[in-house]
Length: 330
Ligand code: IPM
Ligand code: MN
Image (tube, rainbow, N blue to C red; front, side, top):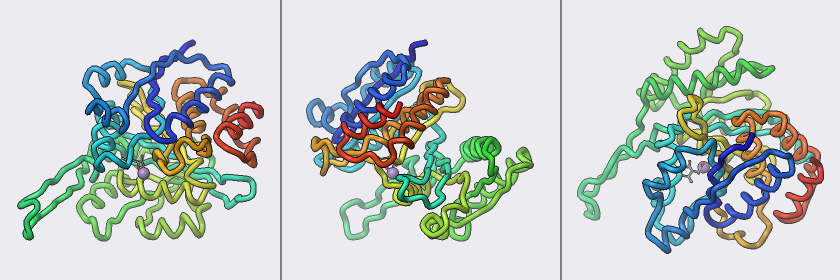
């Protein structure tokens, strides 16, 4: 079966790592019908377009979207992030951002084996807020956090389902309920109520600041974690750092209801400082691609890719060499 996938290589190292991800998928024998989209900072600088409506509508028709990285330093902050990436997350209702972390190189076996479920359509990312008296000494800027019962509950329920399917069956809610007493209260109530549907899952709670310490000092305490959009953003960069580096951190932006395509992308950005040098680690993109195969029902191929990454764990060299080592291990 051929899967129809939209490809957004994007900016910086994005196209370089996406090329390797596609080569690995090809090597594992899964057939894709791909359509390339030139989107990102470069495209914006040349045409002024971020995500034309027709392109968005076309993307809705795919089985999945594979994205490299978007953003260039010469575009003001937010233009591409909000206009392209977040717009895709919101418009396609990709309400779960799933980010797995597994002890990285064989030399670093610190017991990390965790899955972060980051809420992906609400919180501070919803864009609520604005300016008052902008540019004056009395300027005011507000930035709200949107937490709907529906949005929190569906994300929490997804996380419980994942935890229930894992051997350890542990789910930790991470928030800041002692300060964010409104949003935190809603999250806590939703979490506790959904917990009654999953009696076999052991639950826990950590404040986000404490979770940062535990991520570094005893990550083995975590199995599945569920958290809000911004906490999840920050915590998953740390997750990358404690599991072999951000170059291995993968993510799946999922629409579990499957009302449209899900989107798969590395956690890392476009890394303009190393773009074009051929030294970006393609593993984050390759693991993201394996998550895409899982979601497309190609679990055997996905597992083979992850086994090949583990087997070529100590491979060194540039983007192409690591890609070749993964393919050789297949
Ligand atoms: C991520 C990225 C994005 C985010 C940016 C590029 C908008 O940092 O996927 O973690 O903040 O979600
Ligand atoms: Mn991030």
